[in-house]
Length: 516
Image (cartoon, rainbow, N blue to C red; front, side):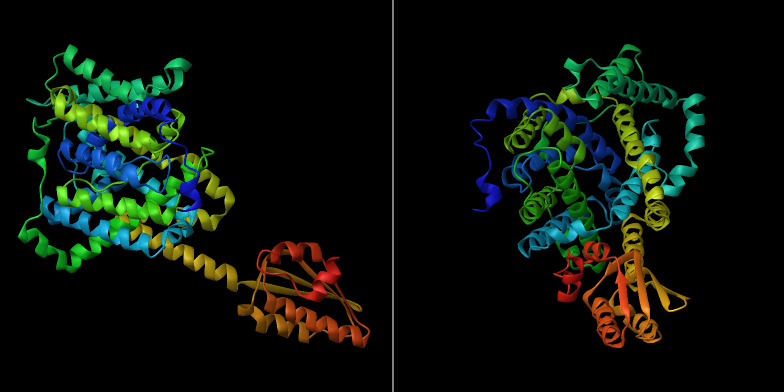
């Protein structure tokens, strides 16, 4: 048993708090499961199945104590594209293979690797996904269909607004628009003005209820959710033909892409949730295995892929959950409702669910984070922007790949860029170092030091250094040893050098003496 597992509270001692929290998570998850399914081009039942598996199965074996898993808005665009390209039957194989990849990644302990992705890439990915969700679901909110690519959806928004304002013969798009607007306005008002004692009631649920009330009270002819009486009848198990597609290189590539995106989103969500509670920390490799098991099951059942999801997980923490029992119970409640009273769900307008995702997409774009990256540095903002544009203009995987490549180029530049400026003032020489003094730039640093007479007083300015390694320090120390014998002197801010170097290993003995 790991130390993380050993510190879990007893589920019995926390059952009351977890049961209450599970109801809150259930109410948050219900509209999102159906909305993400519709956004992915699948029936609402596919999202509900994934929510049930994410709660009951993944919740029971998860490595993140308070994270909730289910269908994610972040994967909706990718799934929609896969459905258009391969069909629903092959999607199940893709999700199954993605689950196997995640299980293997967890068993080989590569969970920590996903945490090394640049924050600028992650924020760019979330913003890009937000733009795509906003653009596609804007059309669904008007009882229309997405137009294809992200750019097509964006370009056609003005025409969609016109259709929502000016009724076309036989169309109910203007009525769907009214339901969508009422839903979003209700969410905004609830977030802003809800009394403290009622804030546990999720804003998306309140918004959907308002949309339901509007559609039924005005007898609108909008589209409503279709949930079958028999959930088992909606399951699409693999056939021999679909299993054969597992050897298709395009299918394998899609499976790896789903696994990478789902794993990154899950583990980043787990990290964020760990910062919001004082309980056990996430075991990343175990969480990857749990997600893989869940996605493998979802693939066999022909439903949506899952990830750890921030909205439901945040609601879980805020509602006072203590153990993974809350996540398990929320899956149980979804199952009970779908099996016992599916007609309740059929009263929900599709436009209300799409409106919730339009709002979610807007929040994912997060202009505040873009401003923060701009202040942090032009390079970080550039990586963010490249990732976002790549996702919207090409596709999700290409956009992320471009962001990762840009991050790598920036890293290489950071560790290979060293500007050396020499300023001679009589017998005193000032050497200004700007960038990273590493072994990669050792020849330039050695050449600069070789050009300075050993009898000089050398002042090395390190305030603009971002990194210094052992090799660079050895070259500087070598110059000082020779200068000491020749009557010269080295002056350097050892406190700053120590700050730059101490995380790697103890600095050379001569430098330690200088610091002390």
